[in-house]
Length: 450
Image (tube, rainbow, N blue to C red; front, side, top):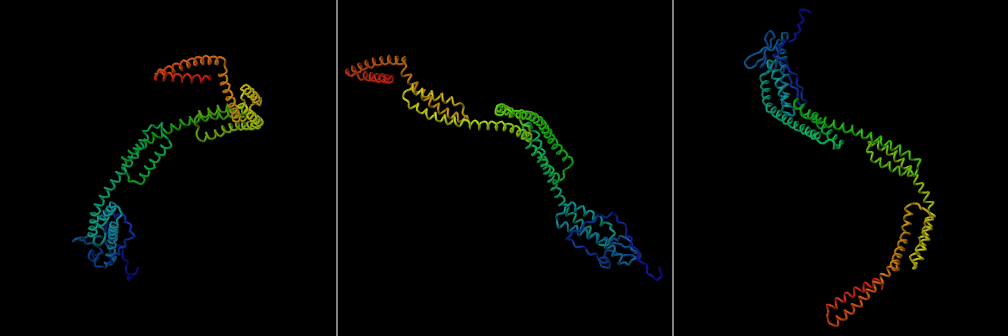
């Protein structure tokens, strides 16, 4: 370096801060950056001064405090450097004030940041109204104090509400566990308990944080209730699996027996019906297993009934001429009712009955029963006529009737004499009694057919 070349200024040596600087607060979008004051401004001269050896001091009240040295620069450059340090702190204070005014930020968080800035502004290596910054921060802290208390109260209320809600979930879970779980619908109980657990997780994720002691106590109760229900549910389904397995094995054997009836055709239907009763008594084997086994069992029965349907169709075709013949006999049997002579009517019906039986069985059975019922009506009508004729022409009955008729005739003759005597004597009472007795005897006599 030549003797005439000016020397470059060395970097300033600031005094060490009394405390470490806090983390810088992010700048809100709405806050305009603070323009640092020029080194030669009046404010710089008001709050700072530079000695001949480059020592920089800041005024705090009536006292001056050394903040650092800037030996190789001009006094303006030295002050400008430390003013920029002040402007950085002032910018943070201004940004914090704007966040407090804008609202939405946590008062406790803002109070913590204000405390950090107070520490940063105390004995700071900067030139400016540091006392004014601390006053602004103290004012801000005081205004945040009440908001912090309100936040704490609201937080407590939210925690109390969350505890009440979690406790309600626990009590509902314990109520489920206290039921007679041998008589519940497990699908419904499982869904209900699952809904409670989902609600618990949602409250835990989105709700306020509870103290560790309370949170663990409530969770233990909830977990214990779930464990009771889960244990009973596993036992139920384990037992149900055993029941399903037993029913599945029994129904599998019934399917094998039903399929073995196929060669017997129609004759296997009675045995299949017995197997069907056993199937109904075997219990449930689970929906899928039941559906699959029932399909096989029903297919075996369908084969038997299909064979019977084929046989019935063949028998019905074979019975068509017999049905026509019986219809013709029924037309002929109508003459039985028109025949006044009972013996000849009986002979006609007997011949028709013999021809009827000679035709043999008729299929379908419903048609046979309908034809038999029509013939039976004719038979019963003739039988009723024969009973009436027998009662009328039976010698013993006729003898008893004649004897009774003679007695009634004698009584009527006697009553007629008594009636005539009473009328002659003018005895109305005796005449009335004789008249009533006479009418009764005549009615009896008419009933005997005399």
